[in-house]
Length: 253
Image 1: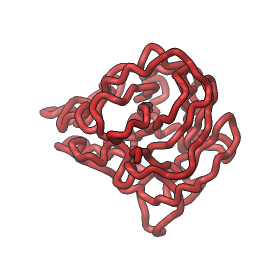
Image 2: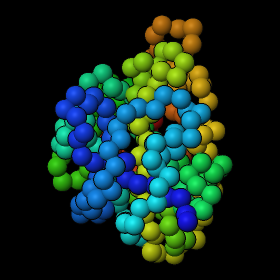
Image 3: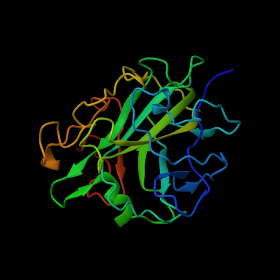
Image 4: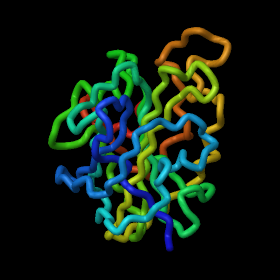
């Protein structure tokens, strides 16, 4: 059986929860529901763990696949303690989105992931990626989006991740919130994902971007924050965060 991932989300488990996860997804502004029934919003701290790909239960294939085609807009909706609550407190950090074919060898297969989008810090207004989730959240569109690339038809995983940096000044202090969604691409494009990113493997404990401010310093300018995970694939049509001036800038940092 193929290993695929779930949408990491859903119902509130305890009122005391203080972390973030995906509640559900929108495709072309149409709500797709939260029918994966996996609650898991605790952070992951060690990037060497196998869970860093799609969280602790993210290797379990689910019966529901979300059908998409090239050009469709897929928009995850995140939550804090309940749907519509995106207060991030002191949780600040980047957003990164990756895509991989749903291979039989699983989500930890080396080099299967390709980065489609990332966003770090806006030096103009002092907002990190997840700050926009709080300030510009609406109940009818999700918080950020990616445009489905023109890839061959088949089954894929889309991995969205927030990394929060409030405790990242020490080794493995950064908090990772990865969440994977199963999609079935029905169009048949010609742009094959190049891969090259591995979970685990690409993120290295203590690397710049996962340790922040950098080791040996007490402060650092967020405008110089180095986004982990490498460059965005040139073949990606991009994505955006609602509230940014240019919603289609896939290479903003």
